[in-house]
Length: 192
Image 1: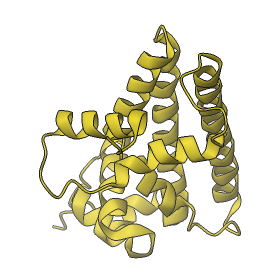
Image 2: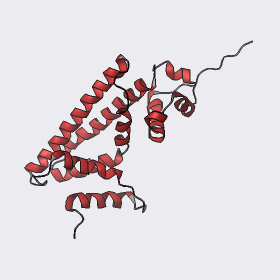
Image 3: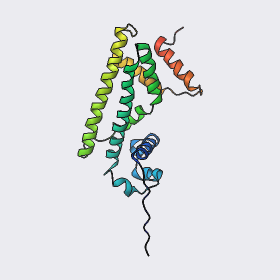
């Protein structure tokens, strides 16, 4: 009698959560279906039932992540003024700080992939444009309210805010204090 083991089931949430973990730990080049399958406790074949290659999976995963990030970013419209919008944006980028690293992984996907990968990359390009339009609106409001210096380029302002999440906290300062200190530096600089 031959007994065939049943494949362990996994959800899309399981798949995407573990995809994110593997991407952050291994990067695009080190990402393999073997590593992912091991984390999910399934065979590689179980993954190939849904995706032809890692580029399809990673680009699908990133669409999911960008959709989630943009949904949270849209909530900024519920903030009554620029000050609260600034704080909301800062909290959001620290809460979702891995999005920057994940975007770097997607930028390594060859644009010459199959039709699904090409469609996913085009969708990701559109999501990035949507994100930058929303962030441009944020900067515009700050300028209109006189909260941002008018001579600073939009890209520099946004880059400075977004790059603040990359500053390592080697001292182990508690999260709230760390974010408050970065907010203070962004608002007022480092000079006494």
